[in-house]
Image 1 (cartoon, rainbow, N blue to C red):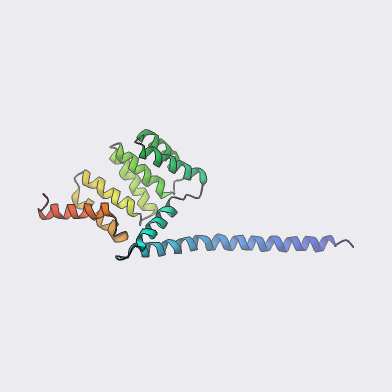
Image 2 (image 1 turned 90 degrees about the vertical axis):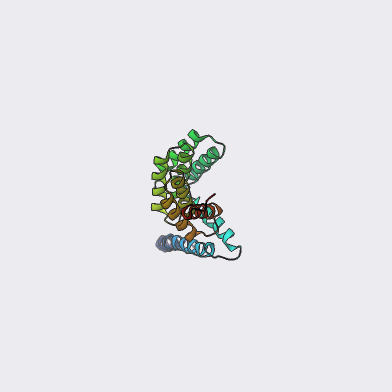
Amino acid sequence: MRPDRNIIHDAVAVLRHNLLTIFFLLAIALPAFAQDSLKDAFERLAQPEGEGWRIAESDILREWSRSGSPAMDLLLQRGEAALDMGDIPSAIGHLTALTDHAPDFAAGFQARAAAYAAAGQFGPALADLARTLQLEPRHFAALTQLGVMLEEMGQDDRALAAYRQSLEIHPHQQEAIDGAARLERKRLGTDI
C-alpha cells in the first residue's frame, strides 16, 4: 500500500515548521546563554579571594577571541602571532584586514591598538582602544593598555583613572596594580 501524497506533504510541512521553530528558539536562547555565562565569569573575576578568577579570566579572554567567523579568528591569530614575533607591519596589516571585515569585533581593535602602540603610533592606538571600549566597556585589557599609553604620554591622572577602572573589573591584573601603585606614589611624591 502506497502512502497518500497529501499525508507525506503534511508530515514534511509539520517537520519543517518544527525545525524552524527549534532553530528560532536556539537563535534567541544561545546569545542570552552566552551573555549569562560571561556575566557569571565577570562576577567570578571580580572576587578578591581565591583562584577562581584565573579560570574566569581565561573564559572571558577565550570568549572575546571568538568572532563567529573562522576566517576572522585566523586573521586575529595571525596578527597576534606577528605582533609576538615583533613583525609590527604584518601585525597591523592582518589586524586592519580583520577590523575592516569585522567592525563589531572588539578583540580585533584591541589587538591592533597594541600593534599601533608598539609602532609608536599612539593616535591610531587610542582610536582603536576607544572603539574596543565602545564595543565592550568591560574590556579590562584595553583599559590597562590605555593606562600604559596615557602614562607613557605623561597624562598621569588619566592613566591612573584607566588603571583604576580596569581594576574595578579585574582586580588581579598585575600590570594595572603596578601602574596604579606607581602613579599613586608619584602623586604623593614618594616615587623614588
